[in-house]
Amino acid sequence: MDSFITIRFKRKTAKRFQEFSKTHFKTHTEAMENILDFFFYNEISPKEKLGPTGRTIEAKLLKRINAVIAIMRDVEKTQTKPTVAMIQSLFQTEEPNKKPLILEKKYADEKKEVRFREKKTSSNKL
Image 1 (cartoon, helix red, strand yellow):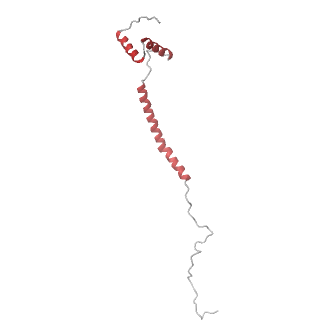
Image 2 (image 1 turned 180 degrees about the vertical axis):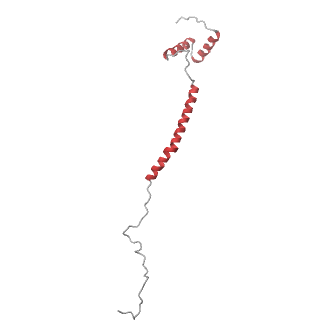
Image 3 (image 1 turned 120 degrees about the vertical axis):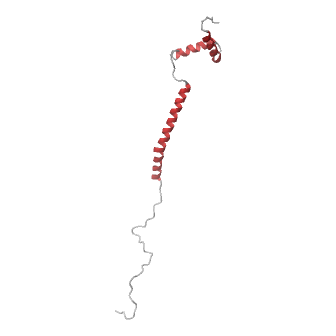
């Protein structure tokens, strides 16, 4: 069994440590070891500020994600959809109008009416 040593803390600090230790660890020794290991392995000082908290980072990420979504929607509206519409119109095939061939006579079936006729009389003899 390991021996113990006494360390003097102010009451307020000791109470804070005891509450923290009870909620996260089994013993006070285990809590202190993990705290010291954290600072040693991450090579940071307890006096340093680590920056924004998880909540503020999450809020910033959500703002950036919303901005990216807005940019993507704008690109879709202004670039993707019109381009897709143009490509689809290029690939759509419509039946060509049946145009009559150049050699085909348009009025072949119609009977042409004669405008001038010779009179059929018996006096006209050649």
